[in-house]
Amino acid sequence: MTEDTTPEPDRIDGAPHPRETAQLFGQSKAEKDFLDAFASGRLHSGWLITGPRGVGKATLAWKIATFLLSSPDAGLFGEPSLHVDPDHPDARLVQAGAHPRLSLIRRPWDDKTKKLRAEITVDAVRNLKTFFHMSAADGGHRVVIVDAADELNRNAANAILKELEEPPANTTILLIAHQPSRLLPTIRSRCRELRCATLSPHDLQKALDQAGHPADSSDALATLAGGSAGDAIRMLNHDGMQLYNELIRTFDGLPHINRPAALKLADSCAGRGADVRFGMTLDLIDFFLSRVARAGLMGEPSTQAAPGEARLLTRLSPHDRAAQRWAQLQQDLSERSRRGRAVNLDPAALILDIIFKIEETAQGVAAA
Image 1 (spheres, rainbow, N blue to C red):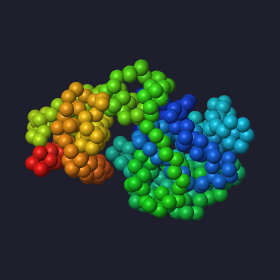
Image 2 (tube, helix red, strand yellow; image 1 turned 180 degrees about the horizontal axis):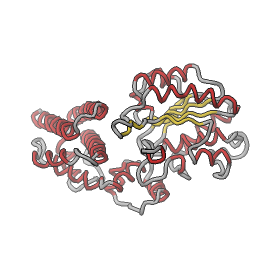
Image 3 (spheres, rainbow, N blue to C red; image 1 turned 135 degrees about the horizontal axis):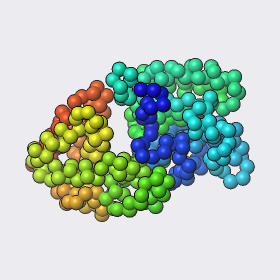
Image 4 (cartoon, rainbow, N blue to C red; image 1 turned 180 degrees about the vertical axis):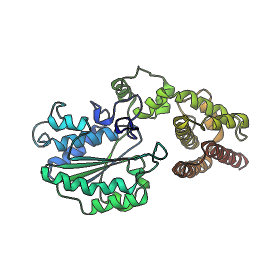
């Protein structure tokens, strides 16, 4: 596979890459917080961009990078803005992925397995030494984007920490994190946080329109996406709404699982070409568990992501004690699925194991 055809782990199929995205919706507060720091002359060397997956964190990072690389003065005069003319020479280099003062760290391609690695390895971070040496002669601002910092393995995280502790002059390191709690506390303490919020229905629709997707204002999609344009696009691209319907039918008999449906679901996540379905199934199970836990605290949801979901949620989680058990299970299974994917555990076996843990918890709640 050539460099031009290697899959990009930070690109969502069916959507422009964040560096190519023209407009960022719904994150005006995060933009303002960064511009305020820039205008005051107190620009941190490390920034942690956090928030749910698919709400625009990477787009924000690339817009900040373009802003810093283009020798900005917009933060000092006139209306503060991260906007840079797309025809600006630095902006054109960024969009082409060829700016000499910008380094992107992400999961590398494994030539042996012909897949993207599950984690960012230390070699990817060590390459920063060469980047800093070669870019020093340019004299301009330098930017490093890590997408996503959650995916750094231990050695890579320690290597990034060293750069944050002794940052090179005139350098900004932008770390994108979907779950910042997984990062080393010392990494978090070395960065200033920019928090990105979930998108309102209006901003979500604008983001989908910009990405070239037909309007879909259904309550089910909006609920399933949870304010994430990235998740909404994944659902539209890969029949996510139908898959979630299958999950609800599989769980409908809890506290006793529908065994044939569970086996069929697990088998559909294994084999050649099933990687996307496997990942989406894990994500949707995590979404389901969060909905169950929330129902125990807040009652029946006002919208549902699949027929019969609201009734199932309230039956499985009728009170706050049940909500606590489901929330703990979600945390445990999230870690289990992360470890299982990291060591390439058999997808069908991992899905069945997770489903049976859900059945076990449902039986425990029913017996309490």
